[in-house]
Length: 237
Image 1 (cartoon, rainbow, N blue to C red):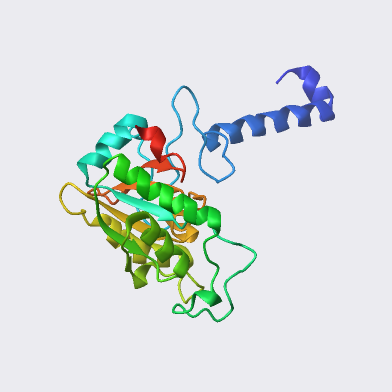
Image 2: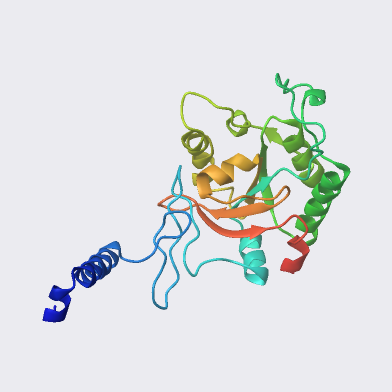
């Protein structure tokens, strides 16, 4: 710090402020992104942000697309988690939903039914083997599974999440993660049709209606390897 700076107090304070700023940047390790995770610096990409409720995430360099995804699914061993197909948002769920009465629920739109049919047709044409088809007890999830795959098993663990005594992300993890940790029947895949909150709470992703996330069971927990939009299955061939 030169004598000239010492003779001018304002200049001295500017120098001190600059030194403090440089020191703070050095300790921070880099800027933070909008989700609070450290942004990557240099030539490597940032790793996936840890998920709120479980051990889900997209592994670096292992994402499957196109023909590679199709061949993996043909070999079996994956969980394909769909958000229900498109719905008619002009008729929301009633405040006192009756799971046995579709009239109290938001149901599939005509476009959603067409998408569900198309998904099932694509699975058959692509020869993707399916074992269990588990759905939420809601009509829109059961109808999606039934139109696509011809059968469903309504599963209480997949019921839509309403506020309870524990945070929704923890509740989603407790309900869904055990199902995805189990290996499907040999040479086949399990299909689950759920509500949007499950993948959002567990995996930090927002699936569109009819979109699917594909998970592989692993020793450290299920790992997401792909996402497929409702009308993109035929592009895997």
